[in-house]
Length: 489
Image (cartoon, rainbow, N blue to C red; front, side, top):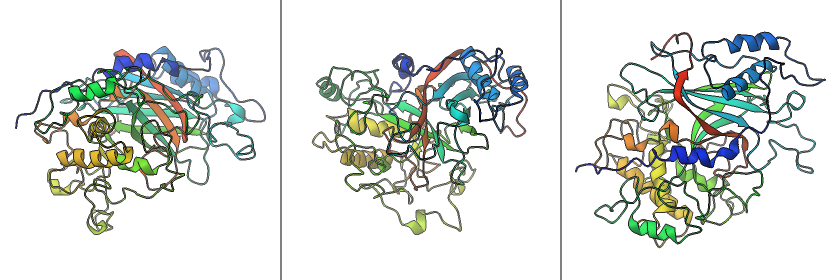
């Protein structure tokens, strides 16, 4: 079967998303740090080496060419009390890594919660975890994304085969409860209305598209926002990102986020957090979407408030034993659980012998998650038009879309099956299954808890958010590394 020619559903989102998220700009004004360093007031203790630290970082080869807003933020972080300076970015090729986008994060732009605000009668006598440190200095962060210009790999960050380094530096997150802080970072891609294309022979939409009948259904909803190329909104009205005016559960954002984990963040002694993460086709995988109805922030129907907590659904289903969800394949834990004789290891992605690659993946490729959400929210005519319940639409879509990639029928997208160079569903390779880094238009940091879920806590709501910020494009790219990594495989 010849693969159909499909326009990528991710390439047209970037410029639209950039304009739509302008509200995520910095709120706190900042004077470049050459004038003076930012220090906490008494009785907290200042950084006695602030001037030297700022001077050191300002002339570093990975910092000197950065855009002014990003450079100022990094110098601001360097001036404060800290355990370590903002991370040094080393090259992983013969030429410097190239900065192509960044995020500036703070604690504004989402509904106030117990992690970032004092709420009388709820936490006004409790220790704060994400704000209030250093006698009230605001919690701030920077996130740098650089592409590695390695021989044989693409240097265009829009190419899903590119290898990308992500450097996160945060000031203001506490070490608490002997866990170093259970924080997690997330790159967010908001669902985009896809182009219209003829259906498959069975009447269902082709990958990354919707049918004319789907488009006609969407046109009847709201204020006609949901046309190809726009960010999808659940009410058909203009885009409404998370806001401090939101009120859980009734007033929430109307976009549909796909959240890619940057992993757990460990806080250091002086409220200092640094994280390095590699973005490539082996890590560009997201949590199993069928966890969402059990995290606490997912509604039963579009337009309805989240009610999982009230319905007693929190924790009813987990993905510890991989499979394709409540309406898909269920596997035996003796075969697909975390075996002490062969512990599960998602890093076992590449091997010359496929049997040595990880086959018990709980995650799925990000673009496959996008395809599932298109079934759930966009394909109202071509996918289960009679079904209005979001949970059942989600469970069915998850099982069906995973089955298109799952070659052995076990309900799991293994490392071999999900490899970018593997073929599936009539396509010559799996490049369509991955959202490029440049299409992740937002970033968030959450306060997590070790509950066994891979999905964000209370997702997709903001109830566990600590920080957020919007994508800033850097074009042309600039040098953003100095020195050479000791092992730059």
